[in-house]
Length: 380
Picture 1 (cartoon, rainbow, N blue to C red):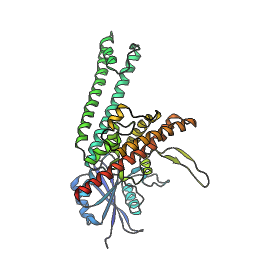
Picture 2 (tube, helix red, strand yellow; picture 1 turned 90 degrees about the horizontal axis):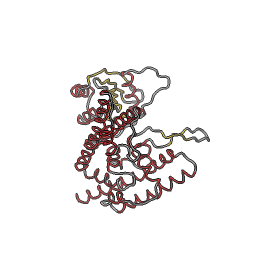
Picture 3 (tube, rainbow, N blue to C red; picture 1 turned 30 degrees about the horizontal axis):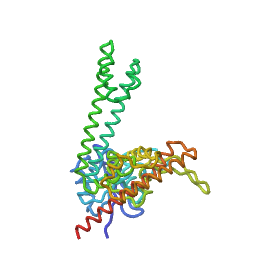
Picture 4 (cartoon, rainbow, N blue to C red; picture 1 turned 60 degrees about the vertical axis):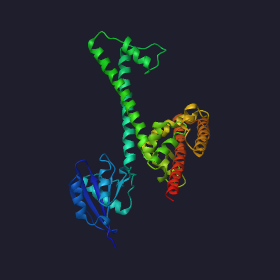
């Protein structure tokens, strides 16, 4: 019978602290030292610890990504990346060191108290990096616009009432009508305007790259991206973001698991006969939660299929269209029922977003199962 050893790694950019927990409830837990965070050092460490089939390795998700995970998998070692916020912590423990963290990981891993996270494959990780780069560009654009608009406001420079903010007419007004007597202020205006235009060009370039990336991703992923766009409020960028953050939707056995993954479920403080629920937990994927909350605002409008939505639904199956139409009726009704009860609009939209995740799960699972069945038929 194999004697399994549980390895806890406290991973940093330059170092990895190693601890091992031997099998059995009372197996020894000891610190093995610190090694450089380099592939050759990791390979030597695994050889010293024993046969790859007898090792179970874990480390916390963090800024070092999944490079170590893939290296260990290639070496034949079972590895799991765990959620750092769900690692058990003793309330009286006030000492934190790399050595203690590694030993705690090894001990908790042996006890089964750790929660692994989903590790994206190469296609999902590449798409997610690109989508998050666009999000960073959008945030940079917002900051650049704020700097310019507040600079103009500070000096009393205001456009005519019929000129909308950040339209081409607005930018032309700044370039042709806004002038300052001081050269320093002219230089400031030119720099702020350049940053706004640079951010716009950057976003356009990234969106073109996303369009190109969609054409190269696996067929199943591309089908889910197209299917999710059948939902109201979810266009191409939103659909790509959801797929990049979730991976395969069918890895969630039921919609409630997806809702919990997003952090959009209510917190609960219940004891005895008293049940008390509070604000949403937010202990989940913030990027997914942001996208579905933005999409949920569309369901305050009456159900209808407009020109843009009809174009997005052109190539999807009738089953997916039926799910989308059902979502419009249910979520619109849900929105107005909660509003009628006097709930805050932001809370109502969050509740609608949580239910929208159920329809996202339904469409994703439907498409993935159909794709899998088609592949099996072709193989037969």
